[in-house]
Image (cartoon, rainbow, N blue to C red):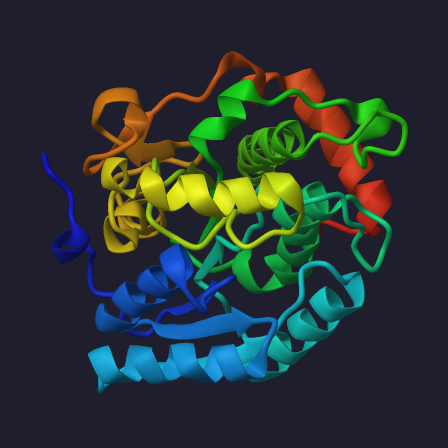
Length: 307
């Protein structure tokens, strides 16, 4: 069966957090969840960009209830502050969409000393998930959706040097590793939720090839080359609203079980409507996932309530 945004069930009464909701996949996801009736919290690093995204959402869905909240995944202090503010405003949370991300950046460090890509894409989201779990665990039908990439297939996790402190930094392998980490985390989170008998499920999704600003505008020769080559390949990509469908289905399709991974159904999972897909074998390695989980908890000082 072809699944589109028209198949999203009524989300009235539900509260959804979408990280990185100022543009691209995150904004498209926020708009469709609001259109289906959810109260959507759009996270943004920049208040101005957040307000612009909220204005666009309200322009497309005038009846929407939505708000913008400041969140910088590169700062654990910001993650803590965001979670505390959200808990003050909302006693429950139905959906957490871990969508924000960076791609193929030059070597940079987060405020807490993490390599930027693993720090933003994985560690920041893991810390956020841990902080928000108390709002999710007892809510029937609640879900955490973590956004990965087909690039995870080229990823390799080096737990001895997760933050690229010993190895020569390479931007694409660092990105691929962060996307494999996303999947390892999503699957391990679901294992632990099921073992705890929680009402929450963890799923994952990837957009295939989607036309967004991700990976463009970085400095250096490699960054300038990406900014030239990516637009040249746009004809191979699908628009952001289509790329958002896998994560929307992962968040709202009641027939999907925890641990499910969604992606486009076309050749190579680059384009097409969302279907259940299979990650590479390493993403389901329970021993590797457990070690990454423990290292993540140590680095972020995250405490996963009741798991």
